[in-house]
Length: 100
Image 1: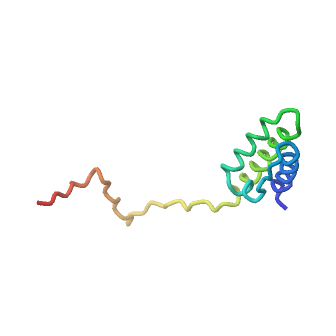
Image 2: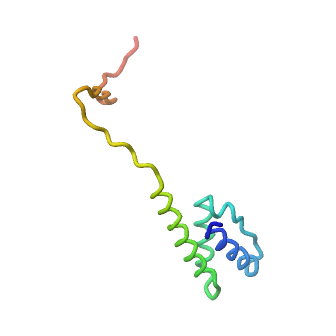
Image 3: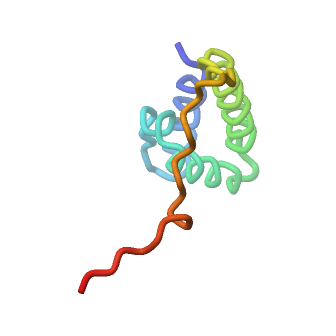
């Protein structure tokens, strides 16, 4: 199981206890905006375990991102050849078309 899900479930329990609101755990893991908002609320709840849980979530999320980047396929490098196609002209190099 993803470490972030475990941390979010602990955040959910604390948020329910202190604010009476439920946390959507799946959305917290998959939607970065929702997760950022949730973590800001956690950071603001001083005197609880929530700021520490927010730090743990950020660390687990960074580990997951690093693992994904390591597994991502590398783009192929282009080997220059004598038969390479000519570059496509940019929009600035083309003359505007006028209709009469």
